[in-house]
Image (cartoon, rainbow, N blue to C red; front, side):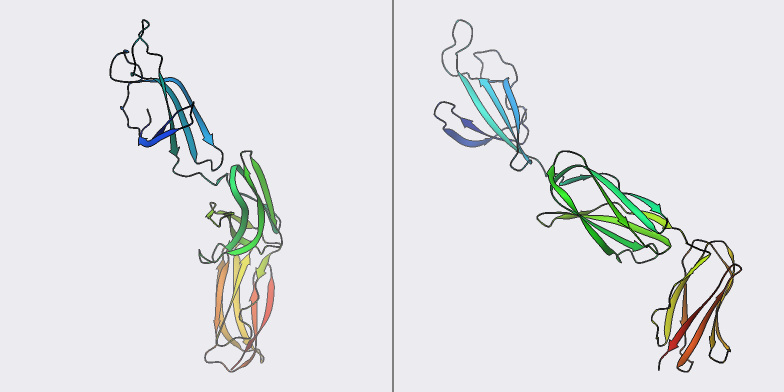
Length: 281
């Protein structure tokens, strides 16, 4: 059976071909009684992959024809041939396995493998913070691919000096023709190197708002306050418990304050930290 395939007649002696025709399901019986009106398919059959594009395969079939005079054996000695070309719906450029991520202190080792590759230029390694927008990816580097191969390939990529907290990684696999696809996302948590991590305020200098984040290793009560240069408290941003291993964002708004130097004071049960802030008018 050749559903939806095309074939063309071929003369093996002269090399001549006939017009292209369409093979349909049920067009011919597999076995017939000679002298009938149908050919017998499947006496000799072969299927060959076209290695030029690996999206085409050829089906060759030699069959008994009904033309001519039937001899004493019930056969007329004539044979016909058909060469059917079948186009696959497309070839998966890269058969990519699972992306794995292993945390090693402030670093993460990424590892993945492919089971086969076709025209694979390589892999772009991308990362974003877990709390960042889903489109806010940063390109970390590029790992060249193996081009075209039917053998399994293994790849690794190490990311050093990561800030603590949850981070998300993915791969952007690109072919030589520019076609690309993404791997599944993988998320890991980079542990805190100490009792807390307080980011720098950004922007700084600022007007009228600046933002910063805080993470603590253990759950504890924390106060987050801002003072002017005279030691007067001008804002209290938090006073209470904070959950561990979570990025806590804070915003300091100074619309009604005079320009100048301010001091951010963060104090927990196991740490104390200070940052300076510059409000410009």
